[in-house]
Amino acid sequence: MNESDYLWRGMALNGQFRVLAVSSTNTVQAARDIHDLSPINTILMGKMIPAVAMLSLDLKDEGAEVTLRFDGDGPLKGALTICNNQGDVRGYAFEPKFWLDDLQENFHPVKYLGNGTLTVIRYYPGDRPTKGLTPLIEGDVAQNLAYYFEQSEQIPTAVNLGVLIDKDAKVRASGGFIIQQLPSADRLNADRLINNINHMPNLSDLMDMGMYLPEILHSFVFKEGGLELYPVHRVRYRCHCSKERFAAALKLLSLDELKELRDGIDPVCQFCNATWHFSASEIEEIISEVEKK
Image: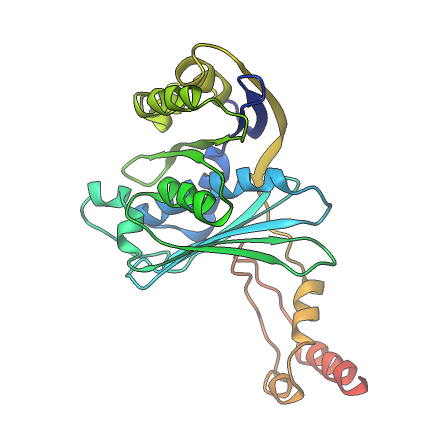
């Protein structure tokens, strides 16, 4: 398996279908290690990370980001993932230590989200974020994302997301692909692709055997030919937090709130667990700046 995670984009069958693909094994492993995720949370993030990475391929502007989040009233609560236009992914689970003793049940995270929503938020610098939202349905992360495309964006879409972990929650494989039917698509071709997807081996098993996403798509989905797929850029887990960003956030607090922090504060980034120390004198400087406004 290549050490670098990667995104691909392409078209198929003379422009009838749009194809996106991603390998994300190392990125998911990084998320698992940073947040010490339980197995069921590793499975959830192991599918949300490749999903949000593929969603990022629609981002054109520097600094643009897309957020994919699942929220539910069940014990798993949900998770949030973000990816920018450079393939930098970050995220966190809402209940990272939620544990199931039944190993098989770990592979059904949406079941433990209960009633809730899937939300996609796209942010472009200088513009107001756009948001799409659909209720959670029965099925996996992939089925819910396909439902989102159908309901919120009116695009017939096939989504396949795979993750494989061992008994210690080490990530052996993670990745996925999205195939979107364009208005010019022949229905017979769409039916044939759906049949191929329904009868292909498990995606994460194929990746664990050493097959690359382009090879998997050519061999099992577009086995009759007609796929043109091109690499875009790498994917990696990367947080952009800094002391300057935390200081800017502190300046948005009220004076009363800031004065409660006068002894100093050590905020922790929820995305990467980095701790940023602000001494009492630094807090006083921030208070002075806020008072001058």
